[in-house]
Amino acid sequence: MSNPFKPTGLRRIFLAALMAAPVGCFAQDDLVWNALDPDNTVYLELQEGTVVILLNPVFAPKTVEHFKQLIKDKFYLGTSFYRVIDGFVAQAGDGSDIDGTQADKPLKAEFEIDWPLEPEDEEEASDWTPLSWTPVQSNDMFAAYTGFIDGFPAARDEEKAGKVWLTHCPGTVAMARNDDPDSGSTDFYIVIGQAPRYLDRNLTVFGRVVWGMDVVQRIKRGPALKNGIIEDDLERSWIKQVRLASSLEQAQRLDIYIADTNSDGFVKMLDGRRNRNQKFFHHTPPRVLDVCQVPIPARLEKPWVPR
Amino acid sequence: MSNPFKPTGLRRIFLAALMAAPVGCFAQDDLVWNALDPDNTVYLELQEGTVVILLNPVFAPKTVEHFKQLIKDKFYLGTSFYRVIDGFVAQAGDGSDIDGTQADKPLKAEFEIDWPLEPEDEEEASDWTPLSWTPVQSNDMFAAYTGFIDGFPAARDEEKAGKVWLTHCPGTVAMARNDDPDSGSTDFYIVIGQAPRYLDRNLTVFGRVVWGMDVVQRIKRGPALKNGIIEDDLERSWIKQVRLASSLEQAQRLDIYIADTNSDGFVKMLDGRRNRNQKFFHHTPPRVLDVCQVPIPARLEKPWVPR
Image (tube, rainbow over all chains, first blue to last red; front, side):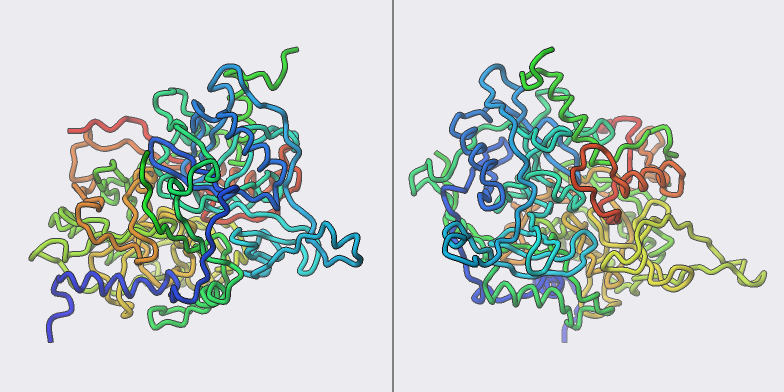
């Protein structure tokens, strides 16, 4: 038998395959894949590459509507990521980068919604939108319950009713604001570090990066001790283009699929991550799950063809 | 009075200053800054830039010794980040990248240590190394207690005795291994995403990135659905050089200082992050702290001068 420590290409794969266990084993076949809704899919093009954001009109209808209007108005062209704190957020879209055409009316806060209880009569039923809920964890330090709602990490204060909100996880997209809860306008941020969950219910989360977080991670950082502000315009990452997928021809869209978080395959994946009984684990980890540490599988079927 | 929504340069700063609140306000004056020990400071030079890692010989004495020997032997030159999963880890240092000279003896696991209780007699006192402990949180879902030990995030299973270990937070550096706990050798990883705390006590954490996490975040990712393995060598981020600060002349070292996590100023900063009573917060966040979401302030006094 050959020496297991003799360096070979195989050994690399071997090591890697074993280290795979902690990531969470799941058979791809088990997952149900959903195409992205082109009318709620945003292509944010930076010099670093393309970032794909899925908007969430269920939790932030007015903000999503406003954001789409800003995209249509080409508001974000010529704005930049002017405040970027490594391990925290990348913030962009302030109108003062450009002169004039700022669609700058303040937005009503959309921090959380009521859990949509089953309607009691026909009148209630007429504007009832049911929500799915794939539970992840009780009492995760920041919320009574965490889970997924149609591909978005979320949290609740009650198990059957109460309030529900989208959580601040890496990749979360939300509106910045001043002290006034209703003061958001155009400035938005993407979470790029350990989940700042203390911001939950305090800012309007209106989307999530579903593809291109590696691109987001290459956005130029500002000095942490100066609040991340990049004073020199030339040092910043600039927004080249922002487009809604539905504004493009079918052939120009990115064919991205994300795992259905309501599917049995996804639930099985959650169980695998919660119950780590592989031989690899010397100490069995606590049987808990951090909703922000669950990767939502995504795949790109068709490579991006630059125009 | 001017319209507060009129775009101006000042407004940008205003917005940003207010958004600063969630980061945690602290007066820099309050912090005590420690220089890095050059004999435990590693400069990892990639094509993306320089990453500075502080080693921890208190928690992983043998692994640190071995890692320093590998650096001295120039083992890592010509190795690459061959497994990089966005939001999880960047893994490098497998000997099969190169032929021959692999210093590849397996390492004993150094997953945790006993809390060093005060010595009861002179004999015990002779090899007693006391540890500082700056508490952060009780029952954070993954551990009974979390805190900082001399600039490293850590956790314990008992308040006064028991075991103590370094936690897996963004920036944590640890040895990869096979199923055998004592099988680590040269392959190491850097945590680049939401803290995979389930790996705590299961892998030997031996250092932490104290400068250049933005560089680490630019390391080329592999395909998530293929376990992050980058098959094409040309696509990978390669290690250009690894050096111990003490092997360089004083003038060539980076003058980096990190906040003393035992100092009153740091404790005050923790309190500020735990008790967010600023006007900004519409919902007062739960008075809890995620040890991996606490930034440890760092500053560079002297810019890096390439040789």
